[in-house]
Image (cartoon, rainbow, N blue to C red):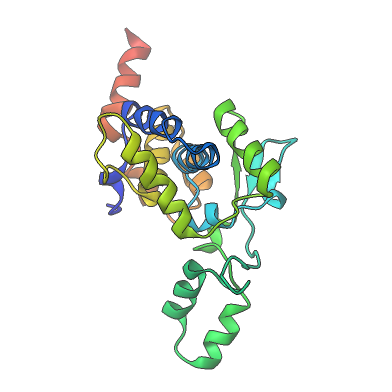
Length: 220
């Protein structure tokens, strides 16, 4: 079972987290926190994907985010790789030469199946959040550390949620649980979240008895 499953929020707690974003005094930080929560918790983008989100990825006509198989990273302090990408390169490199080669490939998605199309037509709130990032910054403007800070601030302001209720990876689990609970089938869930195998999708299909509730509602 994925280690972040225990960080998946219920729908009620997700709304509490969103309420926390509205309570942040700084307007820009509030909107950025809301975008973090909505894009992570409803579209299920991985933290690295959200960190590198660019306007070029957004197909407004079809209302889809197209995660590419490569996107040059320049979010570091020197205009080079951000800390997120440097860590990924370091973990994969076995030599200095390999490190140099891998640097040219980042950012890249976690797996080959992670390059995918993610629809957002189902949520006007997500649409508005994406529009804000697009209009103001041309995508997500910061590194992963700021993404984490925005979520932490939202958690600090969220009513009846503790500060470690979820994480950027937990928001992805929240999105998977949300869509599985509404009946998104295994193949579609796998495609939307870019998982390599069906087993990961299967683990979300009966979260908190959602499938059982839905089946009962259809016959009663």
